[in-house]
Amino acid sequence: MRGLSILLKTLRQTARYPSGAIGLALVAAILFIAIFAPFLAPYDPNKLDVINRLAGPSAEHWLGTDQLGRDLLSRHIYGTQVAMTVALSVIALALLIGMALGILSAYVPGPVERLILIAFDSFSSFPSVILAMAAVAVLGSSMPMLIIVIATSLVPHFGRVARAQVLSVMNEPFVEAERVFGASQLRILVFHIVPNILAPLIVIASLDIPIVIAIEASLSFLGLGLRPPLASWGGLLQDGYQNMSKALLPVLISSAALAIATLAFTMFGEALRNAIDPRSARRPD
Image (cartoon, rainbow, N blue to C red; front, side, top):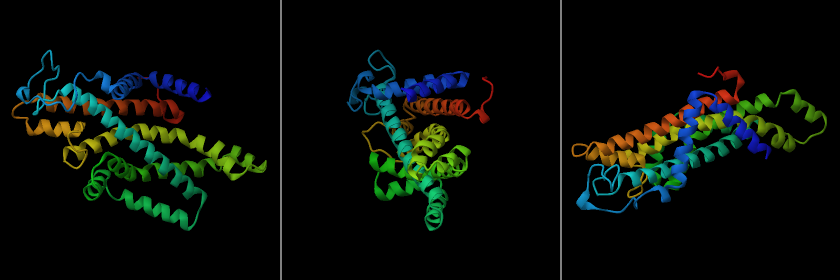
């Protein structure tokens, strides 16, 4: 119950900012669509209707159809589910692995620390998109593989922040007091270190979600991401681009979906950072 009350308090503080309120509302709507996609989509997203391909908006198809006659509204609703599944899975995996490695490098100085930092530097030397493209081209582009590849490229980002936070918290007076009273390292880690480093990591995670969405869409647009007929915003954008001379609406819809999701999570992440970190907080706009 205490964790729920803290979450609700943080969300209320986030909503105090106009940009945070808008971002929170959009994020809630996006998550709602992703969770209830099977109930919200009017058609099977893969149902073909070649006779009515590239049709404009109508009473039957509110956003029209694509080059195979599939309902664009249904495909974009399912595309929201795909985008959120990939983005949230990537962030959760990168956060857990990065935090674990960051804590380990701070707790075990010496060869282990140097090895972890070298690995961080090695992965960080490549742009996330380029690293993901190379890995997907070699290992394949199934959803689990895509999640692992993108998460791996983000692990150093979380790992460095976790390590810096651990080194800072370890020198705090309350941790020294715990040591004086004979608390074990495990107790200090679980009850003091981890809870105090989670806030900045959660903020970074919220700000990295639009990055993951953009990477997945970029890979799908280039044909290296999720394979058809699975609905992906990047794949839908590529389909629309190939038929842009015949119908412009599919490209506009896919571009709008990506823009709204990116803007929503960016606005929410910025407001969340101001709500959690008093040093970065500003007066509500």
